[in-house]
Length: 258
Image 1 (tube, rainbow, N blue to C red):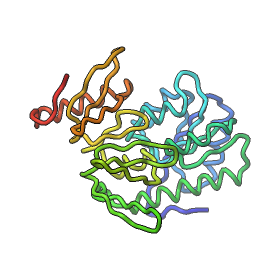
Image 2 (image 1 turned 90 degrees about the vertical axis):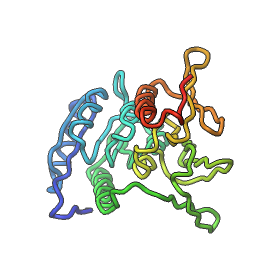
Image 3 (image 1 turned 60 degrees about the horizontal axis):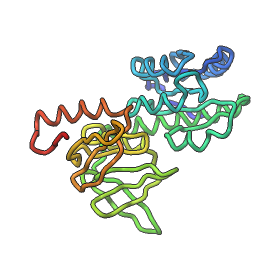
Image 4 (image 1 turned 45 degrees about the vertical axis):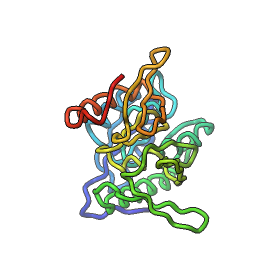
């Protein structure tokens, strides 16, 4: 099994499932691993969001199908607050592709055996070890590998990023570069100082936003300096408006509101 350095703090885990028996099963398996510390259980997506923001667990075992707020809703609402290692747990295999698109580390299909669970937990601990070793500074450049060529892209030059399946499209001026990364991973690397999520599939450089406009049907669009118009999800709108308000106080000349 993958190991965590003995000097590292115990690994905190959150188990989210609306079925008590399913939560108990995962918790019992976790208790066998000496590197696991506190294990918290919750039965709804709304409670999971609350607990993740308070406890900041290292690993989350997340059920897909839950009433009102499912596993995908949980990650979407968390945005950059999503934990470093998320393992989806479900009885349905049709959600697997979408799970990896939103940044899930693994996908446990019920019923799973002890060996399959152990492999998923090992992957999560390896991810944590990698995150711990990684620099806490936000990335200044991204590496793009394509057709045997390695290219470096300055993060500050990125206008916006769009998720397309397993890939992300980086839009820089009139150019588009494709990178095999999820938006969740990119947001962790880019940091929230200059980048913000405006839709479940779109990240925007705050410094490229010229205006927020209301369109037909009371919908909103972010208008970039390049005149590109991007749909603004209602779920992310309030957070973006707050961020733009903070920026406007410092630099009202660069951002307009319509």
